[in-house]
Amino acid sequence: MTYTDWVQRGQWLAATCDMSLPFTQEEWTLPSGILCRSLDRGILEFNPPQLPAQTKDIILSSGIHGNETSPIELLDRLVRDIMAGRLELSHRLLVMIAHPTAINNQTRFIEENLNRLFQVKNEPRNLECDIANNLQDIVSNFYGRSTAVAPERWHLDLHCAIRKSQHYRFALSPFTDKPTRSASLFSFIQQANLDAVLLSNRPSSTFSWHSAEYFGAQALTIELGQVAPLGRNDLTQLDDFDRAMRLLVSEPQLVETKWDSDKTPVYRVNRTLIKQSSDFFFLFPTDVPNFTFFDEGEHIGGDGETQFYIEQGGEAIVFPNPDVAIGQRAVLLVKPTSIEEIL
Image (cartoon, rainbow, N blue to C red):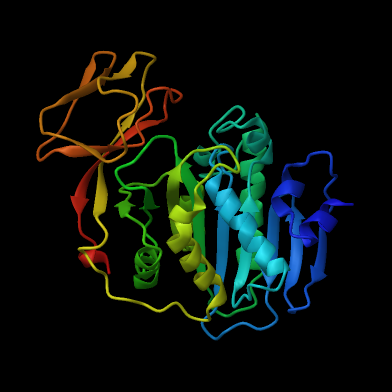
Protein backbone atom coordinates (compact mmCIF):
# COMPACT_ATOMS: atom_id res chain seq x y z
CA MET A 1 0.00 0.00 0.00
CA THR A 2 1.05 3.60 -0.58
CA TYR A 3 1.50 6.38 1.96
CA THR A 4 -1.90 7.78 1.03
CA ASP A 5 -3.56 4.35 1.33
CA TRP A 6 -2.36 4.12 4.94
CA VAL A 7 -3.53 7.65 5.72
CA GLN A 8 -6.97 6.95 4.25
CA ARG A 9 -7.19 3.87 6.46
CA GLY A 10 -6.63 6.04 9.53
CA GLN A 11 -2.92 5.21 9.97
CA TRP A 12 -1.58 8.74 9.54
CA LEU A 13 1.06 8.53 12.28
CA ALA A 14 2.32 5.12 11.19
CA ALA A 15 2.55 6.23 7.56
CA THR A 16 4.30 9.46 8.51
CA CYS A 17 7.02 7.68 10.48
CA ASP A 18 7.55 4.88 7.95
CA MET A 19 10.29 6.42 5.83
CA SER A 20 10.23 3.44 3.46
CA LEU A 21 6.89 4.70 2.11
CA PRO A 22 7.53 7.25 -0.64
CA PHE A 23 5.47 10.42 -0.26
CA THR A 24 3.50 11.98 -3.09
CA GLN A 25 1.07 14.88 -2.83
CA GLU A 26 -2.52 13.74 -3.33
CA GLU A 27 -6.06 14.92 -2.64
CA TRP A 28 -9.36 13.10 -2.24
CA THR A 29 -12.87 13.71 -0.93
CA LEU A 30 -14.36 11.86 2.03
CA PRO A 31 -17.98 10.61 2.01
CA SER A 32 -18.73 13.53 4.37
CA GLY A 33 -17.73 15.93 1.59
CA ILE A 34 -14.49 17.03 3.27
CA LEU A 35 -11.71 17.65 0.75
CA CYS A 36 -8.41 16.20 2.02
CA ARG A 37 -5.03 17.34 0.78
CA SER A 38 -1.85 15.50 1.69
CA LEU A 39 0.65 18.34 1.39
CA ASP A 40 3.78 16.68 2.74
CA ARG A 41 4.78 13.79 4.94
CA GLY A 42 2.86 14.31 8.18
CA ILE A 43 0.89 17.34 6.94
CA LEU A 44 -2.81 17.17 6.03
CA GLU A 45 -5.25 19.89 5.05
CA PHE A 46 -9.01 19.45 5.45
CA ASN A 47 -11.59 21.65 3.71
CA PRO A 48 -15.25 21.12 4.70
CA PRO A 49 -17.87 21.46 1.95
CA GLN A 50 -19.58 24.37 3.73
CA LEU A 51 -18.20 27.02 6.04
CA PRO A 52 -20.07 29.02 8.71
CA ALA A 53 -20.39 32.79 8.51
CA GLN A 54 -17.77 33.27 11.23
CA THR A 55 -15.28 30.78 9.90
CA LYS A 56 -11.84 29.92 11.21
CA ASP A 57 -8.64 28.72 9.55
CA ILE A 58 -7.12 26.45 12.22
CA ILE A 59 -3.64 24.93 12.47
CA LEU A 60 -2.96 22.14 14.96
CA SER A 61 0.74 21.22 15.00
CA SER A 62 2.66 18.55 16.87
CA GLY A 63 6.04 16.86 16.68
CA ILE A 64 8.12 20.03 16.48
CA HIS A 65 10.21 18.14 19.03
CA GLY A 66 10.43 14.45 18.29
CA ASN A 67 10.26 13.16 21.86
CA GLU A 68 7.10 15.10 22.77
CA THR A 69 4.63 12.42 21.85
CA SER A 70 1.27 12.87 23.59
CA PRO A 71 0.17 15.66 21.21
CA ILE A 72 1.16 13.47 18.26
CA GLU A 73 -1.09 10.70 19.57
CA LEU A 74 -3.97 13.13 20.16
CA LEU A 75 -3.79 14.47 16.60
CA ASP A 76 -3.47 10.95 15.19
CA ARG A 77 -6.74 10.03 16.92
CA LEU A 78 -8.38 13.22 15.64
CA VAL A 79 -7.34 12.49 12.05
CA ARG A 80 -8.54 8.89 12.37
CA ASP A 81 -11.98 10.12 13.45
CA ILE A 82 -12.17 12.62 10.59
CA MET A 83 -11.29 9.89 8.09
CA ALA A 84 -13.90 7.54 9.56
CA GLY A 85 -16.63 10.19 9.55
CA ARG A 86 -16.88 10.26 13.34
CA LEU A 87 -15.81 13.91 13.53
CA GLU A 88 -17.34 16.55 11.29
CA LEU A 89 -15.51 19.79 10.60
CA SER A 90 -16.94 23.28 10.49
CA HIS A 91 -13.65 25.03 9.64
CA ARG A 92 -10.62 24.63 7.43
CA LEU A 93 -8.01 22.63 9.30
CA LEU A 94 -4.29 22.00 8.86
CA VAL A 95 -2.75 19.26 11.03
CA MET A 96 0.96 18.53 11.34
CA ILE A 97 3.41 15.95 12.60
CA ALA A 98 6.37 18.18 11.93
CA HIS A 99 9.56 16.17 12.50
CA PRO A 100 9.16 12.42 11.84
CA THR A 101 12.93 11.90 11.66
CA ALA A 102 13.33 13.11 15.27
CA ILE A 103 10.30 11.01 16.29
CA ASN A 104 11.93 7.89 14.88
CA ASN A 105 15.17 8.87 16.58
CA GLN A 106 13.30 9.42 19.87
CA THR A 107 15.10 12.72 20.35
CA ARG A 108 14.09 16.35 20.69
CA PHE A 109 15.84 17.23 17.44
CA ILE A 110 18.64 15.98 15.20
CA GLU A 111 21.03 18.95 15.00
CA GLU A 112 19.21 22.13 16.07
CA ASN A 113 16.14 23.12 18.08
CA LEU A 114 13.41 23.42 15.43
CA ASN A 115 11.30 25.70 17.62
CA ARG A 116 13.90 28.47 17.43
CA LEU A 117 13.88 28.71 13.62
CA PHE A 118 10.67 30.56 12.74
CA GLN A 119 11.71 34.20 12.76
CA VAL A 120 12.85 34.33 9.14
CA LYS A 121 13.80 31.88 6.42
CA ASN A 122 16.93 29.96 7.36
CA GLU A 123 20.10 29.13 5.50
CA PRO A 124 19.83 25.40 4.60
CA ARG A 125 22.51 24.27 7.04
CA ASN A 126 20.69 21.23 8.46
CA LEU A 127 17.47 19.22 8.44
CA GLU A 128 15.72 21.43 11.01
CA CYS A 129 16.33 24.54 8.89
CA ASP A 130 14.82 22.79 5.87
CA ILE A 131 11.78 21.73 7.91
CA ALA A 132 11.26 25.22 9.35
CA ASN A 133 11.46 26.82 5.91
CA ASN A 134 8.99 24.31 4.51
CA LEU A 135 6.55 24.80 7.40
CA GLN A 136 6.67 28.57 6.97
CA ASP A 137 5.68 28.16 3.32
CA ILE A 138 2.90 25.70 4.16
CA VAL A 139 1.44 28.02 6.82
CA SER A 140 1.55 30.99 4.47
CA ASN A 141 -0.14 29.01 1.69
CA PHE A 142 -2.80 27.63 4.04
CA TYR A 143 -3.84 31.01 5.37
CA GLY A 144 -3.48 32.57 1.91
CA ARG A 145 -5.76 30.04 0.18
CA SER A 146 -8.74 30.81 2.39
CA THR A 147 -11.85 31.73 0.39
CA ALA A 148 -13.49 33.49 3.34
CA VAL A 149 -13.53 37.30 3.47
CA ALA A 150 -12.10 37.64 6.98
CA PRO A 151 -11.51 34.25 8.59
CA GLU A 152 -10.32 34.06 12.18
CA ARG A 153 -6.88 32.46 12.16
CA TRP A 154 -5.84 30.05 14.91
CA HIS A 155 -2.67 28.07 15.59
CA LEU A 156 -2.24 25.71 18.53
CA ASP A 157 1.30 24.32 18.61
CA LEU A 158 1.22 21.28 20.91
CA HIS A 159 4.20 20.19 22.99
CA CYS A 160 5.26 18.37 26.18
CA ALA A 161 7.64 19.69 28.81
CA ILE A 162 11.00 18.02 29.38
CA ARG A 163 10.59 18.21 33.17
CA LYS A 164 7.77 17.91 35.65
CA SER A 165 5.63 20.96 36.29
CA GLN A 166 3.57 22.48 39.06
CA HIS A 167 0.99 22.94 36.26
CA TYR A 168 0.59 19.75 34.21
CA ARG A 169 -1.09 21.41 31.21
CA PHE A 170 -0.27 25.05 30.47
CA ALA A 171 -0.31 27.51 27.60
CA LEU A 172 2.20 30.13 26.48
CA SER A 173 0.83 33.16 24.67
CA PRO A 174 3.48 34.61 22.32
CA PHE A 175 4.13 38.35 22.33
CA THR A 176 3.19 40.42 19.28
CA ASP A 177 1.70 43.82 18.54
CA LYS A 178 -1.14 42.10 16.70
CA PRO A 179 -4.52 41.55 18.51
CA THR A 180 -3.85 37.87 19.21
CA ARG A 181 -5.13 37.52 22.78
CA SER A 182 -8.88 37.47 22.16
CA ALA A 183 -11.68 36.61 24.55
CA SER A 184 -12.35 33.53 22.38
CA LEU A 185 -8.79 32.30 22.83
CA PHE A 186 -8.91 32.67 26.59
CA SER A 187 -12.34 31.04 26.69
CA PHE A 188 -10.76 28.08 24.92
CA ILE A 189 -7.98 27.96 27.54
CA GLN A 190 -10.49 27.53 30.34
CA GLN A 191 -12.78 25.20 28.41
CA ALA A 192 -9.73 23.01 27.77
CA ASN A 193 -9.08 23.00 31.53
CA LEU A 194 -5.49 24.13 31.09
CA ASP A 195 -3.84 24.60 34.48
CA ALA A 196 -2.08 27.91 33.80
CA VAL A 197 -1.27 30.46 31.11
CA LEU A 198 2.00 32.32 30.63
CA LEU A 199 2.13 35.67 28.81
CA SER A 200 5.36 36.26 26.91
CA ASN A 201 6.81 39.76 27.04
CA ARG A 202 8.94 39.92 23.90
CA PRO A 203 9.11 38.51 20.36
CA SER A 204 10.59 35.05 19.90
CA SER A 205 11.26 32.68 17.03
CA THR A 206 8.84 29.89 17.94
CA PHE A 207 6.29 28.35 15.59
CA SER A 208 3.25 29.81 17.40
CA TRP A 209 4.89 33.26 17.50
CA HIS A 210 5.45 33.06 13.73
CA SER A 211 1.73 32.57 13.08
CA ALA A 212 0.78 35.31 15.55
CA GLU A 213 3.32 37.83 14.28
CA TYR A 214 3.03 37.33 10.53
CA PHE A 215 -0.61 36.23 10.18
CA GLY A 216 -2.37 37.66 13.24
CA ALA A 217 -3.36 34.19 14.40
CA GLN A 218 -4.83 33.44 17.80
CA ALA A 219 -1.80 31.36 18.69
CA LEU A 220 -0.58 29.38 21.68
CA THR A 221 2.23 27.01 22.50
CA ILE A 222 0.53 24.41 24.69
CA GLU A 223 2.46 22.08 27.00
CA LEU A 224 0.56 18.83 27.57
CA GLY A 225 2.29 16.92 30.35
CA GLN A 226 5.79 15.48 30.31
CA VAL A 227 7.74 13.70 27.59
CA ALA A 228 7.21 9.94 27.25
CA PRO A 229 7.75 7.33 24.51
CA LEU A 230 5.02 6.82 21.93
CA GLY A 231 2.29 4.57 23.28
CA ARG A 232 3.19 5.22 26.92
CA ASN A 233 1.27 8.46 27.46
CA ASP A 234 -1.69 8.64 29.83
CA LEU A 235 -4.00 10.46 27.45
CA THR A 236 -6.85 10.41 29.99
CA GLN A 237 -5.13 13.37 31.67
CA LEU A 238 -5.68 15.28 28.42
CA ASP A 239 -9.37 14.42 27.98
CA ASP A 240 -10.57 17.97 28.66
CA PHE A 241 -8.10 19.45 26.21
CA ASP A 242 -8.97 16.83 23.58
CA ARG A 243 -12.67 17.59 23.98
CA ALA A 244 -12.14 21.35 23.67
CA MET A 245 -9.88 20.89 20.63
CA ARG A 246 -12.52 18.80 18.89
CA LEU A 247 -15.22 21.36 19.66
CA LEU A 248 -12.98 24.10 18.27
CA VAL A 249 -12.77 22.40 14.85
CA SER A 250 -16.31 20.97 14.73
CA GLU A 251 -18.58 23.65 16.18
CA PRO A 252 -19.49 26.63 13.94
CA GLN A 253 -18.77 29.08 16.76
CA LEU A 254 -16.87 28.83 20.02
CA VAL A 255 -18.97 29.76 23.03
CA GLU A 256 -17.25 32.62 24.82
CA THR A 257 -17.26 32.50 28.60
CA LYS A 258 -16.27 35.10 31.17
CA TRP A 259 -12.74 34.60 32.45
CA ASP A 260 -12.64 32.98 35.87
CA SER A 261 -9.52 34.32 37.55
CA ASP A 262 -9.86 31.81 40.40
CA LYS A 263 -9.70 28.84 38.01
CA THR A 264 -6.55 29.46 35.98
CA PRO A 265 -3.37 31.09 37.32
CA VAL A 266 -1.82 33.62 34.94
CA TYR A 267 1.88 34.47 34.81
CA ARG A 268 3.93 37.00 32.88
CA VAL A 269 7.54 36.61 31.84
CA ASN A 270 9.59 38.95 33.98
CA ARG A 271 13.05 38.05 32.66
CA THR A 272 14.64 35.75 30.11
CA LEU A 273 18.14 34.53 30.86
CA ILE A 274 20.19 33.88 27.73
CA LYS A 275 23.19 31.57 27.91
CA GLN A 276 26.27 33.62 27.06
CA SER A 277 29.09 31.16 27.75
CA SER A 278 29.99 27.54 28.46
CA ASP A 279 30.30 28.52 32.14
CA PHE A 280 26.53 28.90 32.55
CA PHE A 281 25.13 27.01 35.56
CA PHE A 282 22.15 26.70 37.91
CA LEU A 283 22.40 26.09 41.64
CA PHE A 284 19.06 24.27 41.93
CA PRO A 285 18.65 20.54 41.15
CA THR A 286 18.03 19.45 37.57
CA ASP A 287 14.67 17.88 38.49
CA VAL A 288 13.08 21.04 39.94
CA PRO A 289 9.60 21.34 38.36
CA ASN A 290 8.51 24.19 36.12
CA PHE A 291 6.83 27.05 38.04
CA THR A 292 8.83 26.38 41.20
CA PHE A 293 8.92 29.66 43.16
CA PHE A 294 12.09 31.20 44.57
CA ASP A 295 12.18 33.95 47.17
CA GLU A 296 13.62 37.41 46.57
CA GLY A 297 17.40 37.47 46.83
CA GLU A 298 17.99 33.74 46.30
CA HIS A 299 21.12 32.93 44.29
CA ILE A 300 20.02 30.62 41.47
CA GLY A 301 23.05 30.44 39.17
CA GLY A 302 25.54 32.29 37.05
CA ASP A 303 27.20 32.71 33.69
CA GLY A 304 30.92 33.44 33.83
CA GLU A 305 31.33 36.48 36.08
CA THR A 306 27.60 37.25 36.08
CA GLN A 307 25.55 35.89 38.98
CA PHE A 308 21.77 35.49 38.95
CA TYR A 309 19.61 36.44 41.92
CA ILE A 310 15.84 36.40 42.29
CA GLU A 311 14.30 39.86 41.97
CA GLN A 312 11.92 41.75 44.25
CA GLY A 313 8.78 39.86 45.20
CA GLY A 314 10.17 36.50 44.08
CA GLU A 315 10.09 34.70 40.74
CA ALA A 316 9.25 31.23 39.45
CA ILE A 317 11.31 29.30 36.90
CA VAL A 318 9.98 27.87 33.62
CA PHE A 319 11.96 25.76 31.10
CA PRO A 320 15.33 25.85 32.89
CA ASN A 321 17.96 24.19 30.73
CA PRO A 322 21.67 25.00 31.23
CA ASP A 323 22.61 22.75 28.30
CA VAL A 324 21.09 24.88 25.53
CA ALA A 325 23.36 26.28 22.86
CA ILE A 326 25.13 29.56 23.60
CA GLY A 327 22.84 32.43 22.59
CA GLN A 328 19.64 30.56 23.37
CA ARG A 329 17.17 30.91 26.24
CA ALA A 330 18.26 29.06 29.37
CA VAL A 331 15.27 29.87 31.60
CA LEU A 332 12.21 32.07 31.91
CA LEU A 333 11.70 33.87 35.22
CA VAL A 334 8.00 34.58 35.71
CA LYS A 335 5.65 36.36 38.10
CA PRO A 336 1.91 36.01 38.76
CA THR A 337 -0.29 38.55 36.96
CA SER A 338 -3.86 38.94 35.68
CA ILE A 339 -5.34 39.21 32.21
CA GLU A 340 -8.26 41.50 32.92
CA GLU A 341 -6.45 44.43 31.29
CA ILE A 342 -6.02 42.59 27.96
CA LEU A 343 -9.53 41.12 27.60
